[in-house]
Image 1 (cartoon, rainbow, N blue to C red):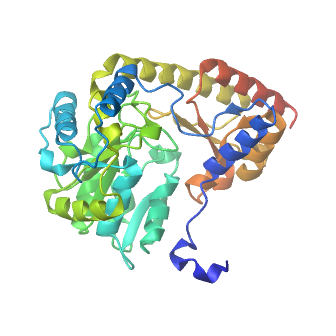
Image 2: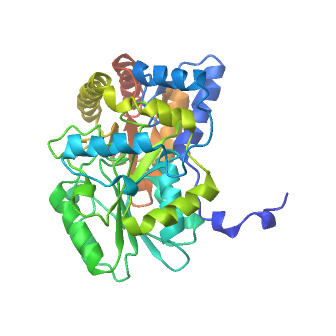
Length: 387
């Protein structure tokens, strides 16, 4: 079939290199090779038993039909209770919408707020799906370079210096790929500057439960007009259940509902019923968080000792954004060589933007400490052969 049949909106959409590397690694494993995975951002822990049992119960009771398009009322109430218990804020249930993963939330928000001629502002480096969703709705994707000087985070000065209108700003907190964690003062500054320019702010808090710093808050506490996106994938080890939520301004609820009804009708019923128990899995969640922190400390120490440039300690998520400039190898070539020569899978900086992308790679430590040690041993040996 000729390319003329494919929408021009897809021309700028970039491949997700981490998934392509994962698929290449899987093909190598199928041939009997042993690969250490440090590329994909997926918890290696199983979903907590309490959640799985609730899913089994829902199946046995035939709760397999469409739910309300905004999500199960009971689950939205659970999320409401979560915000009250965790952050001390009372969010109206009407503002909480269940989505097909956080990707479903971004699809709805971008479809509702962006169009041709509007400007989407994201950081470079930043999560790649933000820009690709922007391209799909034909928005102008404006990537602002961030460096170690601001711990790879956007600041109100970045926004104040823009020569164009920032219609929609998206940040992740904690951040993918850098693991940086914003403090409330910085997000308030960003919101103030965006508001001044008649723009809107989205804060992606999917890694909020994997925050190792003392900067624990939600952007929903700053203003009811800030869009907050969160979900069950990372903190609760439920990636395959494809369930997220968003907290939106009241004026956007009906728009979100109309889009959701047409895009996916309702979120998966079994996943929703299972997630009713996710907030009760506190012991599992704490164990996973503490384990990730130990892995982070090990990886940062090992990688720095090998010569990787890590000027900012990641304070959340399960990623390390590391500089490789000293070896003079482009990040794409670096990760391909490491995969095929050292049997270790990592992600090139090109997945996260263009600014210095050839000089950075991302490590995921969502793997057992034993496997991370093996991966570092292989990497150390491979790097030794470069000198």
